[in-house]
Length: 369
Ligand SMILES: Nc1ncnc2c1ncn2[C@@H]1O[C@H](COP(=O)(O)OP(=O)(O)OP(=O)(O)O)[C@@H](O)[C@H]1O
Ligand SMILES: [Mg+2]
Image (cartoon, rainbow, N blue to C red; front, side, top):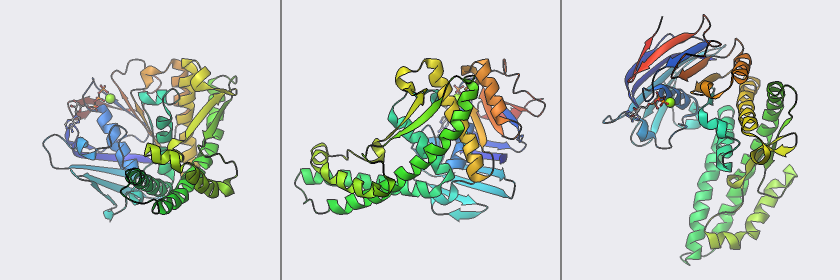
């Protein structure tokens, strides 16, 4: 699939942007710092997953002094074309697909699939568990709207349970209500964990392959989902979950928060059996992160039947030449790529005849050549 056209109004520093002639192959956005390159990447991500990678507050993305922002993308897929509309309002957002309003965001998400690779992704391995959980949630959410729904329900129940824990601790209410939230938490939490396990398994297959190639056959990459519930039998998961919630109730009441569940889980990455976060060199950590990200391209192809759009925000300069080359090879001829950079110097691999080059200056984009 590829993005044929993109239109933005009052989004970040764009008053009005119309890109009608994107290349199905390589598109390079060149510009100095703070000109609006990442803003375009963010807009494309919003059209895909309805969430920004930089903020949780939609209102921040509305152009200063304006009332609302409007984003539109024309998506070409092998079978059909989609027009995606997203309107950001000071409170909440509205979406439509081919002119039909979608009341649930989970019905909007998934028409456009993207894989975003940004400098902070090079920290995926090194960073905290929260970053890896977010990685899992965003990536699974793209291929499974059902997962997004279950995750949202889980998060809602978790918030409610936590506030109830505090009320009970302050003797404002009795503990009876807790049972109801425990039950709901176990139902949705189990669904979230099961889907994550399934995803991690699939992603590993692709990532292993890529990592083996990048490391010249020397390194074996593996993923290990760290479940905060002590349970290896999937059929018993929900049962075990309920029991754990019960057992940890005292601790939870003391802390005023829930100590077990997918919001505490992690993804451990190993090279040749050793945890990369602890034992890996910086180069290994970067390569492992890159393999994880590139694996998503293959995974989405396998799940959705089409390649996603690859967004490379400012990362090329962070990779050495051999990793850059792998990136190009992995995209092959099939993946639409949108690259941002402050300079085209050193990007010879990407500057094929089919590449469109755009200059980004103060929220205005002009095509070069
Ligand atoms: N809500 C907003 N309204 C207007 N302008 C905004 C808004 N949010 C951010 N900006 C502006 O957008 C610019 C940053 O854009 P962006 O992050 O896309 O830069 P960039 O080209 O990616 O730069 P870099 O190379 O440093 O990453 C800043 O000048 C910032 O003031
Ligand atoms: Mg940027």
